[in-house]
Length: 200
Image (cartoon, rainbow, N blue to C red):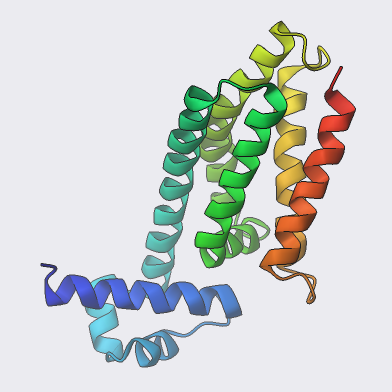
């Protein structure tokens, strides 16, 4: 059974995640996080020292979760998929949609902060991107060998596939009338258009 201190920290992180997502780093105060978490500011500082430390911890957890889940889940799909490239990529897309829905606030924070936080941008470029790329590249490499898609550079294929998924996500955080169901629909439409451009 989890200790009270651990449960308190998890509760603070949960409400901090929600508040950072809604208001951004600068618009969020430790007083507000503490109030929502039903603890004193002193308790928040006892565990996390400062708002910056709390935010860095959350971002670190998000990055590690994204890397771990991307690698494990995509590799599992590839291993279990005996069907063609289209079905494999579609399975990866659906997996990423589910991951996004489960971690919507976390992904929103990562996208928001990457625009203004150079340190996070570097982490995404040098840690997250290579992990995701290493998981996706083999799908396209095998597809070219099996002559299911055009013989295009792997870097291009992977980056275009990920852009296909990312652009509706970014739009959903900015455009008021795109809810998670609409986002799913747009991501699927983007994928279909992308696949039409690469198939033989």
